Figure 1 (cartoon, rainbow, N blue to C red):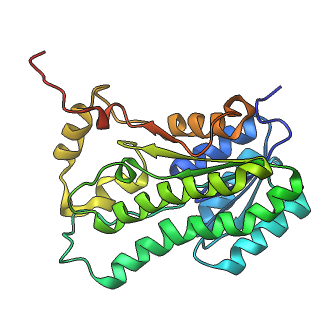
Figure 2 (spheres, one colour; figure 1 turned 120 degrees about the vertical axis):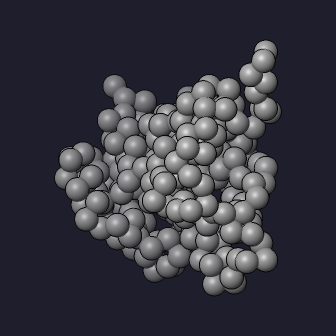
Figure 3 (spheres, helix red, strand yellow; figure 1 turned 30 degrees about the vertical axis):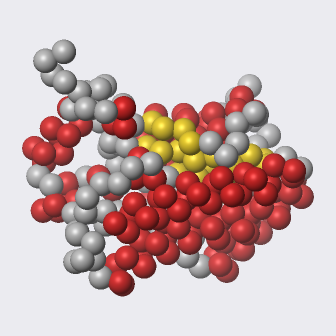
Length: 258
């Protein structure tokens, strides 16, 4: 018996990183999972590897029609969704506010913020029809505190945190819980050296992780386990809340002399 037996989940950004870890863990825990991405080859490979409990479809989270198709296909294949994980996101790192173009700013906002809004907007009616469920929005430690050179990303992740609370207030009467996860210091493609480019060296990146209270980088599966908890009935009295998984990043500064 898996703790997600009987659940039908939609996961955005599921072709790699945290999203892939969520897809694999959810399916292993008994859920039927439909996941989307714009990385089609990777997505198809994940679905083939996971097996019949997972189905991949193309999903541009900024496209309302793509979300409507995802919900319809999920309902047709497995039944109405009872879990939504808004995982898809992009990072713009190491660019000052005054040097951030409006085009780059809006790209981050549209994927990270508008994508979450559309995911909830089009999934909630089917979730109400199913009798309730759980929405898990992936924010960031940047949704709790700022970090220089990430104005668009930080703005989008604060917005995810706020939308989560608003949705929780509106949807509780329908038996739908809505919570946000705030990862920090996780080893994904988003924080890989080739993504961050010249904004931070490999040495600086490793030194940053080493300074965390836990002294290491987090792994995507660790975030997936938290998402599975929030998707499951084990978290039945949690809604409108932030769940932080950051190796202690937001706790403060480690004093190496103590």
